[in-house]
Image 1 (cartoon, rainbow, N blue to C red):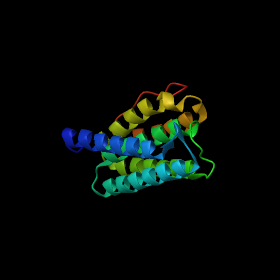
Image 2 (image 1 turned 30 degrees about the vertical axis):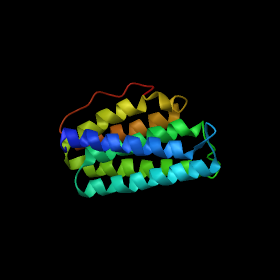
Image 3 (image 1 turned 60 degrees about the vertical axis):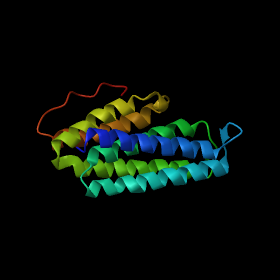
Image 4 (image 1 turned 180 degrees about the horizontal axis):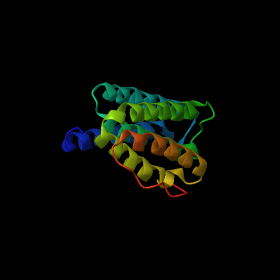
Length: 161
């Protein structure tokens, strides 16, 4: 895992980029069609940059960034005009990165443990309320991959997470 200070400062910078993008895309208190496309493009850029972290073996940071984008996509789902399909595309792109980083972390038990535990916590985020099927599926994917990559057993996931 990278230095804790670097990890936190990088995530803080990503949070600010996300907030700035959403502010820029908001018009009269609402993220309209064009605003949503702009925000999703910014999110896609963040995901593209995060994907480069896999080559640097910074799996925890890569996952944390992807999860942050995914949570923000979930928050936008009911409050923005995503009729262009860009939000669905960004969600799919983010899911692909999460799968990729889970696979890449398989030989690094500390990274795998972090991703597993953070995945459980993220799936319980209130942004996913009403997304029960999505959360269960994503959590199950992570849960099925991560324990076999670690050298120890994890508790079974409780239903509803």
